[in-house]
Image (cartoon, one colour):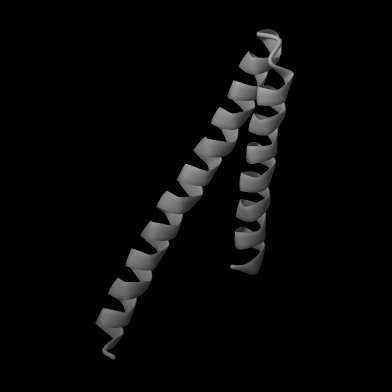
Length: 68
């Protein structure tokens, strides 16, 4: 593998990882916003599911960043 091909593949991989990280962060924050909205609408079960989804997403993101 040529060094230029290796650099191109590495840059493409980091761009894909950036999109995945951005999507995970957006999902986590939208889950927290949804949880707040559900709480104020007296939908405790829905709010807890949104918080659970946010916790899972942020946990997986932290694990991926720690291992990278």
